[in-house]
Image: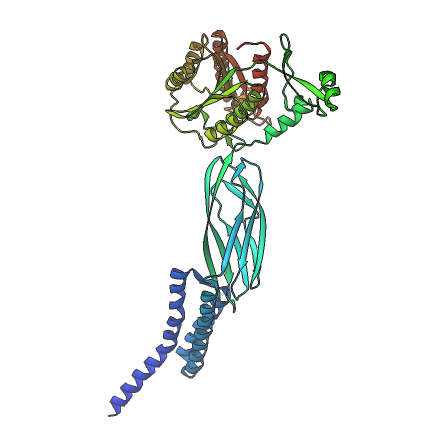
Length: 482
């Protein structure tokens, strides 16, 4: 009898000694469920309380009298944490509205202002952070916004968004993080908010060109005045006088008749055609200042297209690599600029061999009128250099070809400074300089071969391409080469 009683008491004691650990399990189980299912995480305060509960459970191993106190603490924690969790869940499950204000089109590398509005229709104060969805290659300042929003209130946060890559993107979500009433829980909430965004090449240079052209200060961006053979004396129309017009073009008879200053506007040669061939193959994958050679070439081509359209010419675009990606037939008018942007903004360099034969075959099939054909590419070996020379040289009878070759600045620096930029070169610096000089001599021979075949050339660094390309186009117009 005594043995049975002793065994029963021992079993009861063992069960009671396990009771704090059962309560601890009841504390931990909701944590796992809430994290997995509801994205509600324990806060630092809750973590400290759990550590206290674990310490109390350890104490009961050595002091059985502390068992009741530990159980009471665990039960209190369970009740408080459960109530705090339920309040957080029910109050924040609905009633939070988020809206985003952002243009649908932005320019590459140009910061734009974006607004994120959070509306709190719940009965709790939202304290935490809000962060918008950002595609890769995007940056925002600031990246996160502090959130302190009383019930039935609204908050608007502003940030500067910068795109470092062209193309079409989708912003899909907004992420919220806020604490519960007792600060025991932190909820991470993802709200679906879709927004389509297109990133175009930087068009700020077009506005700068237009402003400088009106004020006769194009030399500030490297565009030179070219003396025309003859002059543009074909009368186009009469229009109102503006501040930047030449006073010698004022038509005094029309001014007297209308009682308003009126000027004569003249036009240059019309109906000339410019077609850009943009190489999207492996030769254009190198980068400069964070942008690929294709980005620099596209920016410069769009600038030249803008100038050509304002000169009254028709402009087209052909993008290719191992196949034809897009083709915009030559047209005039201001709407053509939008077509060129739509065709080129999502073109990226691909690690494939460019098929010049397909590109020039497509050109000969779809463009039979004499045009200024501008090919933007990069020559890095004899195979692709020979293809560029042959195909540009073969169309000199039908078209006026212009080859745009992009320089490698590191190659030129290595050839110019055999001892390194700071005079601290290693034992191989001289060999690298000799190899770079040999490649540049070969490249110069390629340019001379193009000239001998009657091909115009522009040889420039990628970040300095715009002004030489526009100058070459204006030279062609001035000499009436088309």
